[in-house]
Amino acid sequence: MLPFKLIYDHRYDLNLGAHVFPSQKYRLIHDQLLAEGIASPEDFLAPQPATDADILSVHSQEYFYKLKTGNLSYEEKLRMEVPYSKELIVACWLAAGGSILAGRRALEDGWGANIGGGFHHAYPDHGEGFCVIHDVAVAIRRLQFDGVIETAMIIDTDVHHGNGTAAIFGGDATVFTLSIHQENNYPYPKPPSTIDINLPDGVGDDDYLAILEKHVHQAFHDFSPQILFYVGGADPYREDQLGGLALTMEGLARRDAIVFDYARRHKVPVAITLAGGYARRVSDTVRIHINTILAARDAAPERKSETTAV
Ligand SMILES: [Zn+2]
Image 1 (tube, helix red, strand yellow):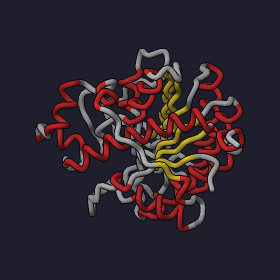
Image 2: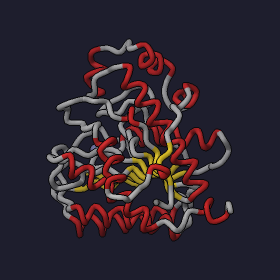
Image 3: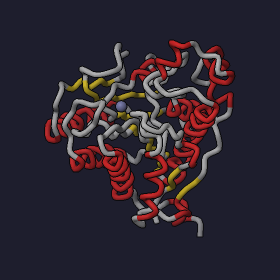
């Protein structure tokens, strides 16, 4: 049993078949967590879909109606890079609801993890790069609207820059954004995050971890968030098909541990989302995401609500 809740819905899997975006990974992670005894069925919570008002707190009305009605142009569909379907919209609303729930549980339990989400390329007025709805932004806006947080930090370790995140929160002093990514890779352009760490091609474990730690230290020195949303991409892995960094699985696990250790020491609740992962073997992507959950387990003290609820 885990000291925090995992948020999951089987409808996260879009059944895209041979698509480079392995949406079956959500189901595989869920099944593997159970099969290995890392999690038990009661560790999982099912999300409610985000409300339309939640979606509209981040996305434009025009884009929202296009998504609802399927009235996207050919170019808009191409840019999204995932086939439009009713199931896609259900999955996106659920993923956003999942990140809201992960955030709420993090505030209650100290930690929460959405076995999905991290769609950091979605902009207010369009989707791109497999990202339709910016679930983390929707979650932060909902928690702010509910008055349970004022400030948030996003640490994004996906190999691709968090362009949607930067566009949404640029100029918003309540949300601090850090993106560590490969500079010579999608997306272009890269609007500025609060901290952008632009890495050259081929960076390996030691250099990556040293530069990450330095900037995470700086982030927590500069800003005291009431919640951390972690966008933990599996694609800085050296076997990734869409990434050009050279981290090992061990390096990726240490990466997660560095971020979680800073959050724990600063007593900041952590909501985890998964983001990208395109390893040649889907099982590697699944393992890297599971390792993120294990790193959170190692960093998390026992669940607060259970120790006090008796
Ligand atoms: Zn990515």
